[in-house]
Image (cartoon, rainbow, N blue to C red; front, side, top):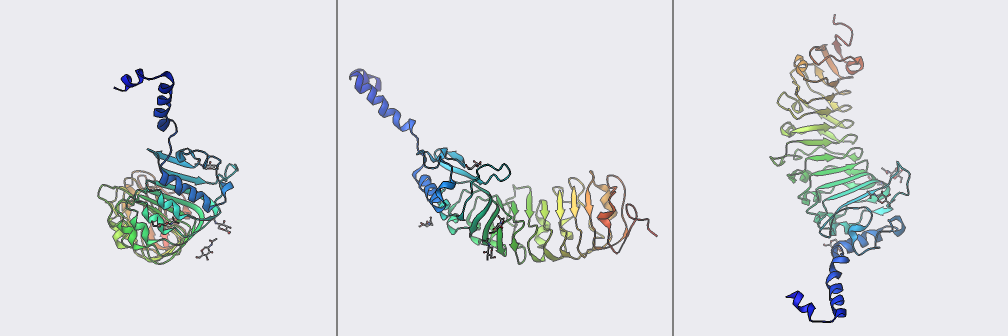
Length: 346
Ligand SMILES: *[C@@H]1O[C@H](CO)[C@@H](O)[C@H](O)[C@H]1NC(C)=O
Ligand SMILES: *[C@@H]1O[C@H](CO)[C@@H](O)[C@H](O)[C@H]1NC(C)=O
Ligand SMILES: *[C@@H]1O[C@H](CO)[C@@H](O)[C@H](O)[C@H]1NC(C)=O
Ligand SMILES: *[C@@H]1O[C@H](CO)[C@@H](O)[C@H](O)[C@H]1NC(C)=O
């Protein structure tokens, strides 16, 4: 029917008709909502910090640092100042803009190496129901970790490392059934680790990773963590006390790494058994752990790094199978550990 119509009109109007029909396809624009949110984002900062592509096209999917788009909707943003390559770096001076909360299809936010980015995580980000990954690394973003993060129901990974965050981790983070990778290393977090964390993890999720290295966390490691399928758990350089034996056990095949060094942990290691399959790295140094090292450790199927220096341990260091540690420092400064790689037992 369309062909019939154009055959009956003049050449000029055929061309015009084609131009008109082609127009919506040749100059695609991203969604108005996303366009406006990104313009507002840019206006929060000094405009000359942005790539020239910002605003140059109606299609905001073509702008620099917009690293993902689907059907004209922005899905990911990556802002990094390329300090390593010393190129003209994108240096964001100011606070995290609430306007990002209007990018409703966003699935990931990555912001790295922004020393001049400060202030709180804006409440408007709680609208980002599709957000799966947040990585804000090495910035001066501060304040408490907001409890409204529990409204980001798609969240799987939360990485806020080397920032200026303080206060306690909100127990509401445990409401997120898909959140299985959490890191807040090198902040100023205080209080206890919420026992709710990972407590509602979806049954289909087989691993959890937690990294809270270098904060000021106190109290006990939650007993509920004994039921979490950890792969990596790193809590070193805090002020944690009490028991950690429940993190170990033969029945934890996914466990690869446990680092608890430089805390105030105090428990009997004698009956603690080690997962044998995937474990590679255990660091319990500089705590107040007592008892002895269970002979069962020689069942590990690959060589492991076991560091228990500066504790209250005693007895003969087991040796056999893949467990043949050579570095005496890993066992140094205990009450009465003996045997290779330390001097022989008396
Ligand atoms: C973001 O933009 C800055 C400045 O143009 C550029 O140096 C950086 O490589 C961009 N990063 C990404 C991931 O696009
Ligand atoms: C934050 O969200 C509210 C409600 O959706 C909206 O009215 C407000 O304009 C937003 N603020 C900013 C700065 O985007
Ligand atoms: C935070 O800001 C201070 C000075 O204002 C700066 O020295 C420091 O490097 C910044 N921190 C980060 C992680 O960028
Ligand atoms: C870091 O956070 C503290 C509050 O804990 C605040 O007083 C300080 O201004 C923040 N530093 C920066 C550079 O934002």
